[in-house]
Image 1 (cartoon, one colour):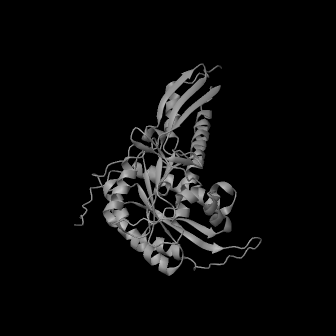
Image 2: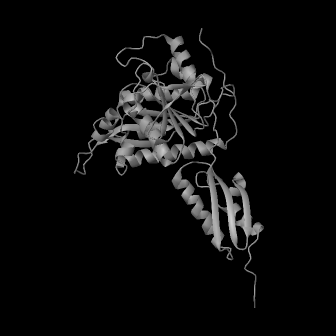
Length: 365
């Protein structure tokens, strides 16, 4: 008895439609991610979109597609053309204007200084880039810009078409007022001037085709934060804290501020969680233990990462060589990579949700 081994386009489309997209768990058919299927003489070519740029997600999606096609039989060759199609996830403010060329904006904030917010912002940005994303990093901490040192760049940016061209380091586009001002002079500006500077960085920088723009905010809940949530659709905020009670109390204030203005909270990063001497198994919780977990549970947000105290993490910030890249196999680098993947997954799911209702903001006079 003979039977045909020819596979049809309809059969391929049917099995592909059942494959789950890794970040969301929804089917490719439901998300309309398969854009083209061609079948000829047992050879199959597929064009499919990925909701995240994360290499491991795309690799899993390709494996799942090939496994699904293997169930058909009669296929001698499979060619998969996959492209990242990161969607904007938006925010609660319908009147906020997107930054040209930027699909998602991630605000890294803290309630107080000295908790390692900039360290988290830098290592998140370079980890996202290493994972396959197109990333920018904006140093919005105008009173204490640290990106020139932490990213290892100290040139002055150029102009093109009356726009500022961001510098590049470690696969990330970077902009900071530290590239422009004398590093030995303090910035003595009142709120309106700071807001004007932030607006210029948002509108007059050629970011060009970014999946994610990471904002390193100044600590607290002042003019810069309010300017940003009023002007641009922030996709989500990450609150950085240490396990110490005084830091946690201020972290909650920052978290509540973003919630009040309907900015999604991606989660909490607990920095300086413990110290583990080299060659020892025991961990020393210098700043307390469990504070980040308790705070995230009480506020209904995710504890995204717990970052230990490591000399290489500190020294990497001082030398412009982020630990996520210089020590890629370290536990800290893996923690930041997991953070990057969690953020990408959250934003992918958020982009599929219904738009939020507009938020009423009271302007100060």
